Amino acid sequence: MLVLLEGTRMSLSRLHIVDDDPTIREIARRVAEAAGFEALGFDAPADFLAAAASDPPELVLLDLAIGEQDGIGVLEALAKLNSRCAIIVLSGLEDRLVGAAVRIGRSLGLQMLEPLAKPFQLHDLRARLSAAAAMVLPIRESDVRDALASHQLVPRYQPKVRLSDGAPVGCEALVRWQHPSRGLLAPSHFLPLVEAGPSITPLTYQMIERAMTDLAAWRQRHPGLSVAVNVSARSLDDAEFADRVWEILARTGADPSSLTLEITETAAMADTAAVAAMLTRLRIRKVNLSLDDFGTGFSSLVELHRMPFSELKVDRAFVGTMETDRDARVIVKAIIGLAHTLGLITVAEGVETEAAMDMLREMGCDVAQGYGIGKPMTAEAFQEWLDARAGIAAPSLAPPPGPRGLAHGSR
Amino acid sequence: MAADEPVLDPSALAALEEVVGAAASAEIARLFREDSESRVARGSAALAVGDLAAVAREFHALKSSAATLGARRLSALAARLEAAGLAGDVIVARQVGSGLDATLRATLDALAGSRAAA
Image (tube, rainbow over all chains, first blue to last red; front, side, top):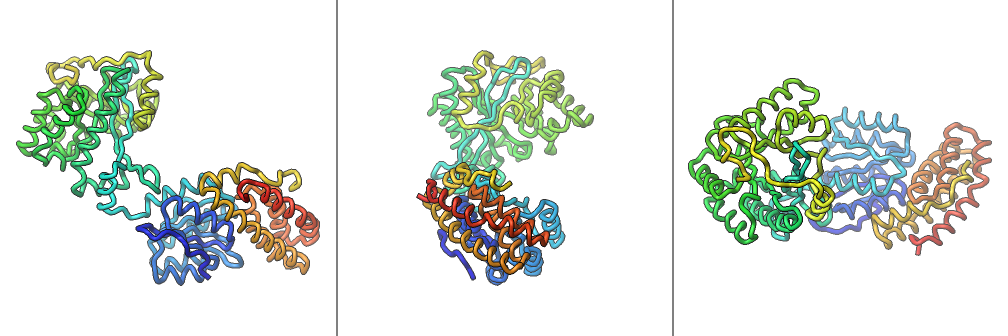
């Protein structure tokens, strides 16, 4: 018997709940709807499997002890259907049994997510379903376009500090999707779609404008701060890019040197004279240019030489492992040395520990960013974060020793 | 001992209301009332005829749903009945089961008086 059929019919994905307990089913259904699913409850495995055969499920909450039956048979039947659904095992049984069931599901080729113990903590259930929703619900390019138009793509700001004294120097704006039913979505859920579609350039302009507006508010109490915004290769294809950025700076009254455009090596490799000219025009007008994720691309040294960068970001892949991996440490040190020789400011990303901070400081790295300093936060939270550190002055960065002092963003 | 547990832990219901809203949590509480009454009736009948597998099954389910709604004393009692059922110990099961009706009543009264049921 299909027990519960209500649910909103929109472009939602479905959650199948297989549990013979009506209370648990109803709780799961209500929480799932709040997380953006259309939820269907089944009290008998046979009914669920009949439905699954005609209309493949996307996410299944499966109780392991369903009346006189067990959930293993359901897993085997789903495997026979070649189901690609994700499965969360629900169980009041002991961990060892649940673990065995999960392993059986995996060995059958099923996508088994972390199981959920009963009784649930409601908040856990909600968090798990929201996370699963973000994973399994298909997002279309048109959804992202709508989100952009309705300003649901919002910045979160991750602080950066100067390593020599810990003073805040600014932040990086990172995009998140404030989804109406699914909560705050990380870029991995939607950014690849945006980057492949027409929304990437409008998104870049929106992010720059939001960041410069927020920066103006922070700078009232904390002058000298700057904001970095990511620019994709596709945006650099827009012949108007430099003019549009300049317009935004004029409209928001922002100091051009308070904006840093972060460009990945791959984007910088889009080797056209037009891109180089555009970036150079922005740089002449004092906008800072940062080479992002340095060390992960291919043409690093050539780009450093050819493009008018003012800053270099050492990729988290090296920073995250340098405490334990000697090679990574040597690479970080070499990158910092190289950057300084070229007169570039160095920013290490992915800094998570005090030990990493110490190590980077010793290597002469200028700026650090990472969870160890601050997670991405709202504009208001960043203001509070700054206020809490008000004792630490935040002047512009001192130039590192090097022959190309004029390349620095603070000049 | 099950009797040491509070009848109702209001924080579980508060969390439920916070996550799904007042109307949905009242509906969930109503479903639980119906289901727990029928489970206790079925479990008691199974206990009377000594069908311990059915005892374990009914009280396994009740253990989880009761705990999710914060009905801690009923959940603890159900857990002991499930264990006795699994162990095949009809004497212990009947001993524990003697407190069942009173605990169910107290739970449902407490639920009726809570905000979720309002």
